[in-house]
Image 1 (cartoon, rainbow, N blue to C red):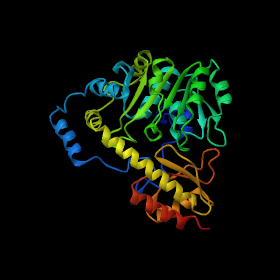
Image 2: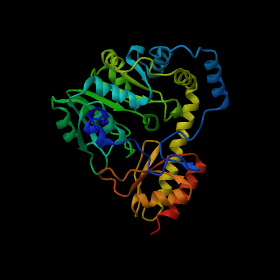
Image 3: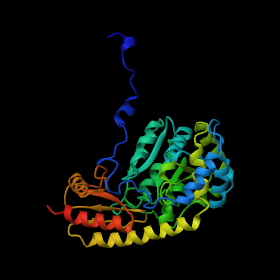
Image 4: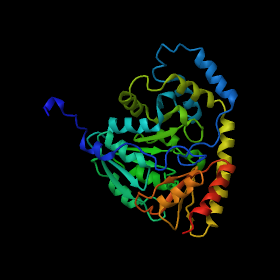
Length: 358
């Protein structure tokens, strides 16, 4: 074959990653594998978004930087709009931060942790250094402080509550890591609403802190793919320079503005998820051979007496889809289940009881 006929080769580290996959597929009668909100938005809210979309020209680009969304989020978070950047999901936000601050340098993160954090760091051109969590899934603060104090570390990524463990790291531990870090610290608060704690206002005192949030979890807007970054204006300027223009489409902007007008409904749904999380956790504790771990997110990590892929397939046979996370260090025989509606949770608990028997 001639040289001109050869297929181009991707970067070796990209080839090693592979594409994002979901074991067990993407759908089942009871879908509890992606930490989505169990409730869709009411028809009247959807109709309002549709009406606003119909009134807008579709042949024109959407607002360049999502100004109206940034202003609404600034009011909601208690910060100036110039401290907010909106993105197509929080994954795009993390990728932009890596590209802006860590390309060709090093990113520190924890394991077990968010599955895509390593991939996004590598795609952004960074080298990855993983620091193991403690056995209780808390932060190993001395090890983290030593790692992030290295001047070659350009970015530190932490998710709190952490995914897939569900642990919200202690505020003093996060601040200790922040104080030790020489580079940017990115705190992913995708599940913060379910924990009732946030460091978003700490960006005022810490110029090297960026907080990620998303509409996909507590807001129940995963289909719109909207995330945002809160940080000092100089960090936001770098993020916006790394983002493509018009990155947030018209539907995403209108949907985000619509749901921000219903904070009481969002809070009520979060409270229901927290109540169900406690109920499901107690029920898991009563199952022989099953070890659930305390969670402050909208999911629960649990260990089974059988290999995780076996339990995953048995649950699928009962119409229930959860997430196999057993490939991460320290999570052997572990699966993660999203807290769904009361009916979905009952279906899951019944199916799991039938699936963990040897």
